[in-house]
Length: 139
Image (cartoon, rainbow, N blue to C red; front, side, top):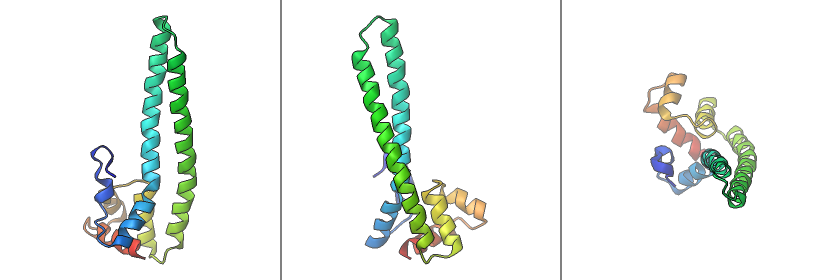
């Protein structure tokens, strides 16, 4: 899945099936958070439309229903994220990866940091991060 040109999903350069599977499973929090952000934008738009409908003396029942549906979808997505994050945190903590590898996985899958930022913050060469990331996924 490539959300709006976001290259996040291909950064790990996983070639083995199990590595791709783990990467995909761990990316669930990012995908849920991204979905929540989109829904928040949609709620703002629907709220603005509802205000416009009221100012124009247009029946706002349809606009209210649309806003209600988006807000319900947002609530469900938020609940899903709140279920996913602890699962990912536990999976990372329970792996046989080194502490550095666990930190890379945490930064990548829970803090949504890029390889560049992780390398900078952990004082690694940029080429080291994808290698350690892949190694951690395989563990």
